[in-house]
Amino acid sequence: MVSPGSSVTDRVRALVAAHRGDRGALLPILHRIQAEFGYVDSDVVPVLAAELNISRADVHGVITFYTDFRSEPAGRTVLKLCRAEACQSVGAEQLVAHAEQVLGIKCGQTTPDGSVTLEQVFCLGNCALGPAGQVNDRVRGRLSPARLDALLTETVNR
Ligand code: FES
Image (cartoon, rainbow, N blue to C red; front, side, top):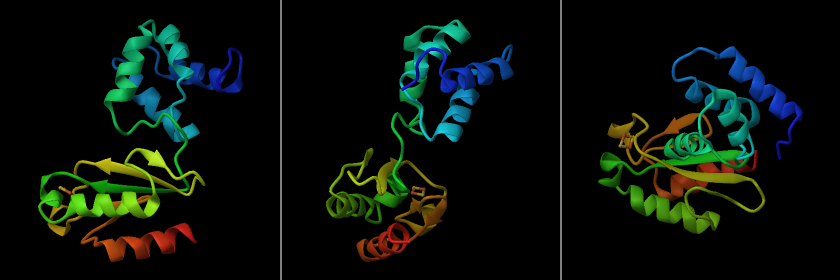
């Protein structure tokens, strides 16, 4: 929760000041906010709107348009599964269904214990090795349900 005068508000204002005068400043500012706080809290929307002299709807629209921006903190492990065409043709949908079933969540959600966030992506640049996924910062290829289970066990129980 960001309240007026909070350190988060001050930090957001400082980020805006660093980009003052830049064209298209909103996107880099949002990336910096997410990098620093792990997500873009909805409470920063009015701060950004006021500081950048744009509407709250414009800020909200950008945040929701780009799937990279999170509105809540991510789990300790972030699992991204590719659902683009090349990966779909080699079983991505079955892999997503398996992940949702074993984790008990849908894409875009985090397990109640905060251990895993499951996200869908549309191409990780690893099309020749589909189905592709990413566990935290590491891209993985030729994922099968069994391989995914092993990766999750190894990563989550670390
Ligand atoms: S289509 Fe899945 S990595 Fe490119």
